[in-house]
Length: 366
Ligand code: UD1
Ligand code: UDP
Image 1 (tube, rainbow, N blue to C red):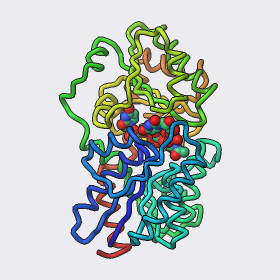
Image 2 (image 1 turned 180 degrees about the vertical axis):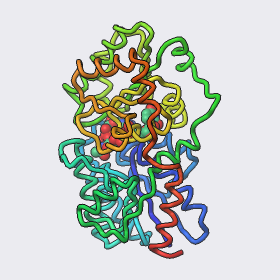
Image 3 (image 1 turned 90 degrees about the horizontal axis):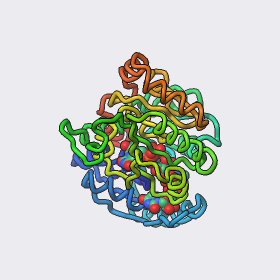
Image 4 (image 1 turned 120 degrees about the vertical axis):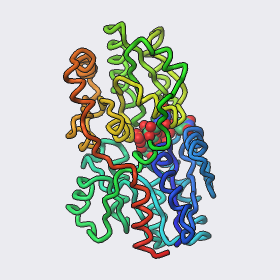
């Protein structure tokens, strides 16, 4: 069996590298990895950490890239690779433009598609944008579905997808954590936070860039000003539009450290040692519950309601007053904090990648 794994951004790499590792362990599987290069530095960081070499890299990233530009460059590049490799299955992940275009290209060439992290939904096409469209579209043309949770499976079934090809595997993000968390982890940033409560911040969602992001960051600044024992570390996304807003709002604030995107190993350990996480990220909503760290999700919708239901995630939107109120409640109300941090992780046992490989062997043979 030949599997071609295609991806292009940091979160896809973090969740696909554990699968590639397991595929490469099997002597009856040929595994090829193709990077679109939708991300550059942030993607390379992950490939280095997991020590995985790609077979192809389309290097499509440009500064301030548009969805159409990225899509066109990936589509043109992949056509030739699919023709040359003739894989039995193309494996894509989640909801990015890279995943969507990789799936469409496979569909055009009648190559079966396996979708890792299938079935996540908000059912609101503008939120997150364009990811909700991407994930629904990928599922429309996929042949095999790797649903991380029972809820995701149920959503696929509700849409009439073939039950015989839907597998509940857990989320591969939890597999990745097994390789990255260190008991005695040290960094100078964490040393800086040692006598404070450390909030970890990330933000990058396309639909938040502009007005909502100004409010999110203004809220964080206010939380710092109101609470002298709080320090914030913000590994800032490479997107120049995000950087511009952050630099404006956080200017002169000495209890926030804006650092370059962290290597995934470092980031997971920063998460583990944080008091609270403020984010609009998707993947962090899956990882934090496995580490027992409460998360305030600065978005209006989430496709990961399992964590909200478990009690470790709280959807707080992008309204400044609301973010401040929720964060300060967690800073001041110990009982509430304890309850939130003790919730059970709903995203799997860290063996999702093995399950995905076994399912592929069952579907396509050795
Ligand atoms: C993309 C995904 C989003 C995912 C996010 C993970 C889509 C539509 N969006 O959004 O679902 O949550 O990745 O981070 O697929 N840049 C760099 N270096 C990098 C990466 C990005 O300089 O390594 C800059 C470039 O200027 C680029 C910009 O960031 O143009 C935006 O990157 P892009 O992939 O278009 O959007 P993300 O917000 O990263
Ligand atoms: N992450 C990382 N370094 C950072 C910030 C995040 O390695 O500085 C990891 C994080 O652990 C998670 C993933 O990147 O696995 C989330 O990526 P992002 O928020 O960019 O995308 P999303 O999950 O929202 O698609």
